[in-house]
Image (cartoon, rainbow, N blue to C red):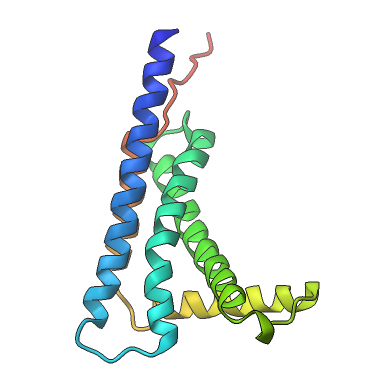
Length: 162
């Protein structure tokens, strides 16, 4: 019983540290890209959001990785990469929606349809912001995050059928 509790505590600490490192790394990459340029308000808003979205995506990917825990390394890597990219984009879009609704509540359409279209618009604009211009450092960081989760994330021994 003690081993299970110890493993869970170590796993939680690894997941929290991983999320912190990924969040700071994603934020730092964008700050480095925009350091010598004048930024508009949308870019500043996205810079604030990227670190939080990266950290939340890292925690989500670590948690969801238990569904692929019995698979081989390649499957765990591909699963982690897919989940991380989808979660990062989703959290980025969600945080932009929340930020715009908190910052400018009187300018928002609060109906369900208005919230839907605002979330779609913010998701697309966040993804475009991250993809244009192409940032190879982000591709490497995403791959590194997936490798880290595949190697150090939740794993279970395969059961051998006899």
